[in-house]
Amino acid sequence: MKDHIEADPTPYAEVEAVLREEFAGVHSTTTVTRCVEAAHYGALEVTGYAHPSLVERIARKHLHVLALVASERG
Image (cartoon, helix red, strand yellow):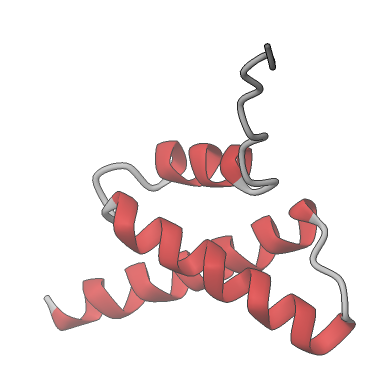
């Protein structure tokens, strides 16, 4: 009988959790997830590798820009 082994969470699950908490009340969890995914693909495209710390920095910048745009719209 095989033991049930749960799949490891995405390497960005912790990044998403940190950013969801940081931007709670500003962005939805869906927006945070989309920014993390976009950061992941952007990092891969530019550097060929997407280390979680790089993805976190890029996603945080995306979220800050989105918040700035939203605040300017009123």
